[in-house]
Amino acid sequence: MSGGRKHGNLPIFVPHIGCPHRCTFCDQRTISGAKTAPTPKDVEKLCIDALSLDPDRELELAFFGGSFTAIDRDYMISLLKAADKFVGKGIVGIRLSTRPDAVGEEVLGILKRYHVTAIELGVQSMSDEILAKNRRGHTAADVYGAVERIKKFGFELGLQMMIGLDGDTEDTTLYTAEKIIDFAPDTVRIYPTIALDHTELGERLKRGEYTALTLEDGVRRTARVMELFGEKAPDIRIIRVGLHPSEEVEQNMLGGPYHPAFRELCESEIMKKRLLSQLEKLEKGSYRVLVNPKDISRMNGQKRNNIQSLAALGYDITVKGDERIKPLYPTVDRL
Image 1 (spheres, rainbow, N blue to C red):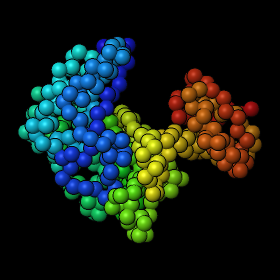
Image 2: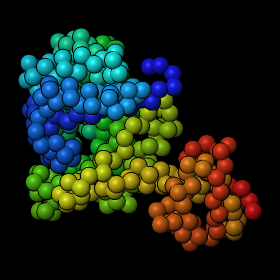
Image 3: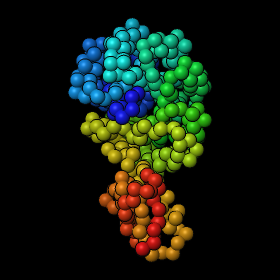
Image 4: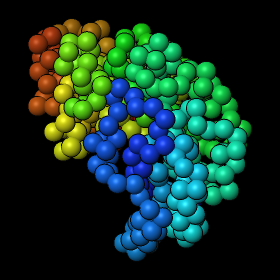
């Protein structure tokens, strides 16, 4: 990519097509908002429109929402061909998401030919018991093999994990995060489990067979995972935390830690925890806290709940922006 130019993703959703299994939690049409499968002409139009609107922006076309490498082979190639026409002409590469059991060497060779640059695997959990309970249809061993092959072919590797699946605990969440760190991917996405209407998980929730995480627990557990990545693998980019804000999700969700600003809530929790570790070494009282200016709202917390919870512990906090402060790392400065 040339220096100084903006980079972004140009997403196109391929819902459910090719998925050999229906996971208990899955309703990609609700999550993505996509109702029909895209055609090659749809791909071409998307690229033409995007590049004409912002010709100075470098875009990576991203096929999301299903198991791209498991769809009908001719259809898959037709979509790749449509996108490939624009590679080098504003489109810098192609990104896709798929299943760990759908990336054999033959299909990886095809993806390489059509300038696919990054492959994201829906790992979700590294516990075989949890994968089976949520009808993922693949095992942890499939993930190991897929990661090895993707790296061998030289693709950028992205891994996706879910928090709060049926059977998931805090320990198994951290176990999955640790295994993902061991794989050393380039990127990671962290999704809390949302139980949607018209899914098997939604039905389990209605029958009392599944307990969804509360927003508070989801934020706390996700924040811990984010901290773990920051402590052990700061080079792994966390490119998504939580589902994209969506009216469809809000209308169809039955339970789970959904919030349109979920990542910000998690980062706010991280900042409160880091600040409290400093304050606990000090006497109760009033303190000024310096944060990166971009983090002022995160430090305050939604509806100033961080300020209020710290006040309840005896710490009267005044937050001030300071460009010298590292993002997400508040620093106590006595008044």
